[in-house]
Image (cartoon, rainbow, N blue to C red; front, side, top):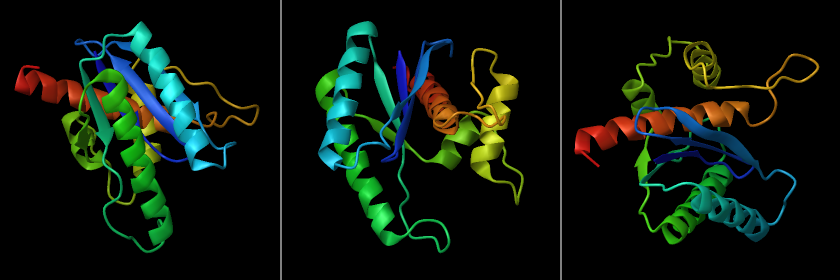
Length: 174
């Protein structure tokens, strides 16, 4: 089984797929109410310990964090915090599942999944709509105002990472 992760300091999307890309679990870990870095990490650790008891994970794929500053997107401080948290979550994964995670850029993952974001479109929104339209097992709840509940975009991104990881596993015969 493949575990795909979309990590941020406020919400972690995760998807567990079997070898045929069937969704076994696709959820989010909501961390925005926790201000302390270590409390966030402890919550992630607890969730992954629970997952390890339910599923026999054979590979872990994580969306690569931003590698460079992009004006208008994330500040240097945000990139640093995300990279630090990404490292801690990666270490937690390696400890709990006894697997060294592999990293996939969002663009590469989308390519492996056949998702081509048109120029000028917001990738996160396009990917979410693509997954919603093409993956029958992907379920989303909506708010009273018709917006996806928080964590929905992260879950969609984690699905793309997990599916791309599955493609890589088949290519590498894992």
